[in-house]
Length: 315
Image (tube, rainbow, N blue to C red; front, side, top):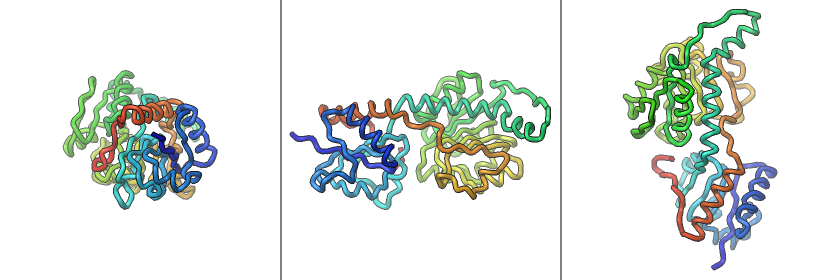
């Protein structure tokens, strides 16, 4: 039986796309992997697998017989927000290296806030020599929203460092060394306790706008925020209000409602916001390609699909 050509469908620039194509082809020498634009109509008709990197969902309509697609990124919300629900299964990247990278970023930027780095930067700009009171990690409570692969690993790393950690997820979870909450009342408990709030939630219809005026007001006065999830989870106007009235002390933002962040956006110049260019947990191509390649081999030889996204839940 002839194998179908595997399309690579992405929103990447040509150089990035070629890098992925070269690495995938090297890891899957028995497969023909082509960019969608180079495929014949016959090849498109017969494709049952596609490898994707944040594509325009309309591009996948050119592949009418897809059984499943494998994302090389963890986020797949763009496909789930299309006008018509996909008629194929979606596999998101679950990579231990991605979890390690994210947990590293969460610890690094939590320490940035914990040790008053934004305040010392502000003092330096005014030539102010003023030691600030030291607070131990155990006295600092960090709330983690989202306890999936990335959130659980990040929470464990914070616990190992010595922070007091609480967490919230849509469904009940259990992680050693921390209190885990779920449901609306559970979210309020986490917000009430958090000195630093770390958002690692997937973007779904239920989480869009979750960090609203109402919920941000439930944070401890002087709390700080890290958003490494998706921009649409955090109400930007609500955040600006809370920062300007002083209820929230500082925000580290790596994701935004519009990316790249427009040059005219007030976040760039706000003294209590740190802007990052979506770099908290970049995909590591080497490890991602090996995971994708093994999943495709399992499908070809064993007719076995990896775990797929629940279209209704969004993850």
